[in-house]
Figure 1: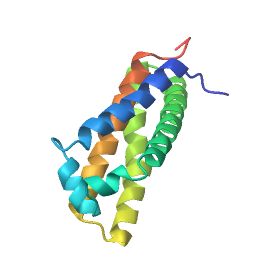
Figure 2 (figure 1 turned 180 degrees about the vertical axis):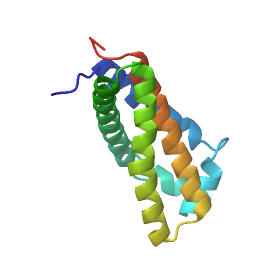
Figure 3 (figure 1 turned 135 degrees about the horizontal axis):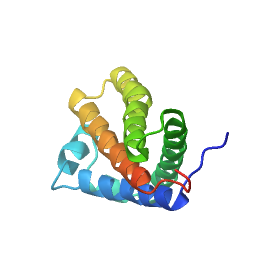
Figure 4 (figure 1 turned 30 degrees about the vertical axis):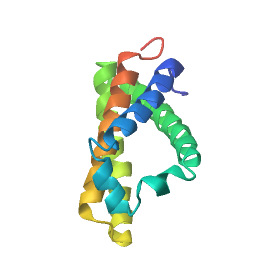
Length: 142
């Protein structure tokens, strides 16, 4: 079985990731703390900024695409609300893959726990918003 995917929803979810990141890591929200915690300053972030942004778009698309496929599979298995399945699937995938792996890596990297929590919360918000977008615009037949 190949999951049905609404690629318009995937593209919107990808864009939402960029918007959430721009807001989350802005100076008025958590940007100042993040810069200090990772050892950067405004100048160091300007040099070579294009490459991380390109990587972020590609990775965000892959995340949204996988989430859309997983949401379709869970909806076909459990039925019910496509939106609810998408959100619950996103939260489970976040906990099992994103949070679990990030906590492990940050522990070995000896990153400040506040930075780990900040980044985990950002990923949680990003995934939930992606899941809502995917859930509101399910593929044809869902």
